[in-house]
Image (cartoon, rainbow, N blue to C red):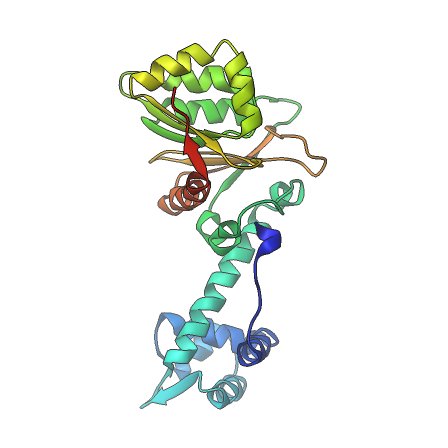
Length: 272
C-alpha cells in the first residue's frame, strides 16, 4: 500500500536527486537530453535560455558525471540517462494530480498499492467525469455504455450494489465474459442476493470467474481491451460513484492491468 512504500535512498543517490530537483535548469537539461543528444544552439532554442546559463548547468551536471560532450554535442552518460529516466517518470507521475486535481483531492488514496504511484504516469491522459445538477447520472451512464461495448471485462468491485451487479451481469453472454474480484463482505452479500444463482450458472458456463480478495478493497476498477475506469472512496470512507476517471488509451489499459494483477495475486478463485 502507498503508506508502506519504502523511499529509502542511499546517501549518494539522495544527494544527487536533491541536487537535480533544486534547479529547474539542471532538471530541464537532463530531461531534454534523455530524448537525444543536442548541440548548444538546440539547447538554447528548446530551453529558452542563454548560452551562459546552459553552460553553467552543463558544468554542474558534468561534476556529477551525468553529462558529457562528444564533439559539438552534449549527451548523457549512462549514469545520467538512468537519472534522467527516473526524473521523467517522476514528473509524469506527479502530473496526474495536476491534470485531474478534483478527483484525487476528493478521495482517499492512501490504501492503494504502491503500483499506483510507481505507474501513475500511464493514466495521465484520463478524462474526469462527474455528476452535476443537470446530469446526476452521467458517470454511471458512461460506465455502463463502456462495459456494454466490451467483450472481456475485468472488475474489482469493493461494494455490494444491485444497480452495478444487474448491469454488469447483463453484459455477460454468449460473446462476453467477466473476471470479478470482491472481498469477503461483498461475497457474503452476493451469496444472500438474488444474483447468486445467476452467477453460479454463468460460472459453470465459463462466462464468469469469481475471485475473493484477502483483505478489504478500496477501489472500483474496471477495464477491458478498450478502456479503463476508476472510482474511489471519499475522505469520509463512503464509496463515490459521482466522480470517475476514464481512459481509453493503451497506457491507461496497461495501468489498469497492472493494478488488477496486484489484487489478482492476492485473491483466490471461488469454486461455485
